[in-house]
Length: 450
Image 1 (cartoon, rainbow, N blue to C red):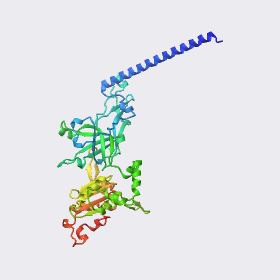
Image 2 (image 1 turned 90 degrees about the horizontal axis):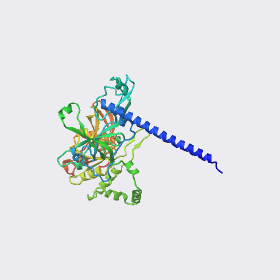
Image 3 (image 1 turned 135 degrees about the horizontal axis):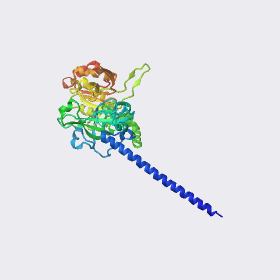
Image 4 (image 1 turned 120 degrees about the vertical axis):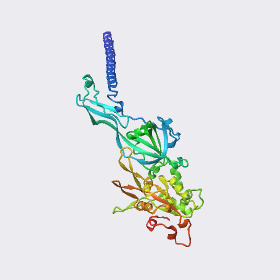
């Protein structure tokens, strides 16, 4: 039989535990309210006195917000984005012409006060800011002392920053107009996702950027514009990326096609199907698109696997159409003409960086077509001095630059597809092939198929 006194004692101890728990919760809640009120009063006093937060939220934030567009959202051209879309999330399509180096961008500046020993932080929201001249710690505020602030790199916070130049595609430019260019600012996870020559959809916030320095005096109320990138989707992938994205259905179709005895002719006929005939030319273009791996010998010499083709024929035989089709279907393809290209435009030009003012290299058509195909139409119309600039590219697949104190070697692992007309625009059967072609022997020896 149970003891009734024991039951009463258990009830008393349980009631005491419940009372202690309630008292402890009340004390903790009151403590949190007091701490929150003290923090609010201190932050409010500091903000009211100096207009700067003592501890910016971005300093302790461990995440970043990025917006991804809807799958069915259509991409716009650069010229279609206007002032009415400032502050909106937009998606643009274009080709990347220049990519800057990755540099640190300060978002929080840290200062150390020699008077009180406190560390003060300032949030940076623009390209130019005024450093703090007065310590905003409670100790210096109570003593009415300005303190002595020294900027500390250790406590500051930086983000990886990269500037990208995006240019309109040729199919987006109206007749009689020139392509427009838009500046893209990439931060943290968006950097190193684009290379010169890439075609991509870039989604971001369209923002104004005030001019600085002497340009601000001339511009007045005008402002430059930029796109703060949130999501980047490349449209043309490399061959190794395409192989990793094969679906099982597509893999089965490719395996079935490989068992076809006429697979070479069947695939070659799919090149520019609107053009009748030219079976041998289309087979050569198929070999150009497929290519071969680069071989490296034991002594360190490399043998290129990309082939170079020159299409020589009379006017009106669809040479330009074949060039445009190959440049379109290639993962990285650049189309240019001989009369509208110079040696600097094909290789690389020295430009001044708009952010730092330093002299930098901007790649030309051959650099943009790295690991791809560069189609040059009207090859015979080029000047001889400009044509010699691609000799090194066709054999060594590199571009050696020594300009404005910059000495470097750029990669140009590209296949050259050129189209030209014979002498006097018509092929003369009474003349030898060398006399009809009228190209230097040093250049002809670098073409694998003519």
